[in-house]
Length: 263
Image 1 (cartoon, helix red, strand yellow):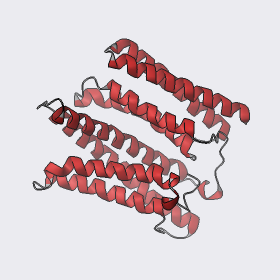
Image 2 (cartoon, rainbow, N blue to C red):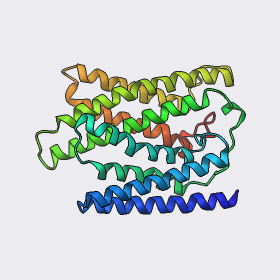
Image 3 (cartoon, rainbow, N blue to C red):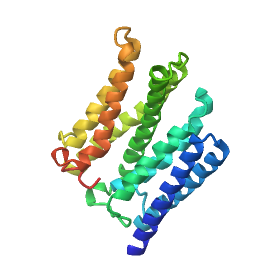
């Protein structure tokens, strides 16, 4: 569907441009105008997802380009839902910037608008497995941004009162971890149904286990007085492993995943 590929490309370009304008407005402290532009960017991004969904005939969770659009769409709603609960203040500019990055990534990738599921993906586990992982990744990204904001304000701006960001990040990761655990376990069950083995130490599987273990280590560090000062570092390492699992395993030849090459 060449015409739909063109539509997706134009919508992605428009979404990136609108988000960039929102980012500039928020940096200039024109918060109302920036928020309106961010909302418009989110609506245009939703149009990308809707076009992908129509072309595929099923939730657009299969190709990396599709998933990056979904991930971008999740950041702002999650942040807005969590902002009031955790008294995060006005951090819109950081999450607008975070929303731009996956869209640029999707724009740079080959457009597979009418992507079709291979037989291994034609399973009832497809949507819950991918949805749980995407939700956990989005929440982990929100927590990571809060950690970077906290470290920046402590080290650069020399602010003392940053504990709310640390506490909010921890609570958000507590919400993310069960989804990540379900994604890991459901993937194993799905693998057994598709390939006859629960675990094959494929690079994607291996890095997903490393990521899960590092986040488990982060939670442990919160309760160990000796490790607690290093909790932020462990979280950053865990997020780096998450990026490797989600993105680098698919893009770097030395880490390429055979069983997950369709993703």
